[in-house]
Image 1 (cartoon, protein in one colour):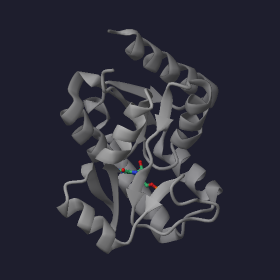
Image 2: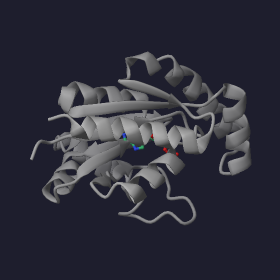
Image 3: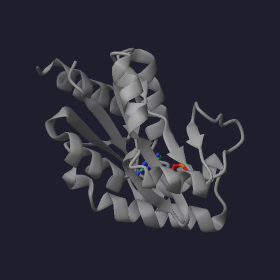
Length: 189
Ligand code: 5GP
């Protein structure tokens, strides 16, 4: 089977997680690609389900072993990466990895897998909406909220490099649009 891959990127708070969860529930061919990360687990997060939580030392060991398809320091001192072994695990199950990563990681994976990769950027309707959503979520301190907004502003400037941009003005509509894009992509070849 061809090694295809779906990459979804969005600034933190753009509603990506909800869309990704709905897609995984409705498209059994997709499997969530669990990233490795050095940040601390949030309440309710499970190692090996949400992320493979690694120490900085273990993460650097994996970099040295060339174990990553891509990795980035997404936030100050916090590393996130897609393990090649994770993608292989999913392909071996005859599924297609759904990778939920940042802009730079997404473009690196696109570079690697080219036409076998579909990149979708989920855009919030505005930065104000993003600020509201992040405040409501209540997971951020003032500093980390500002950091996430700054990163969002930067990430938005790369949206044109993606195969598709979907504006999350209304969740159900955005979800349907993303689902149609994936269905079309999987139909080809
Ligand atoms: P969070 O800390 O909120 O779980 O994730 C923060 C950011 O890290 C998100 O924008 C997410 O897309 C990104 N991210 C998660 N996993 C990876 C990965 O494996 N590689 C890269 N480059 N970014 C990732």
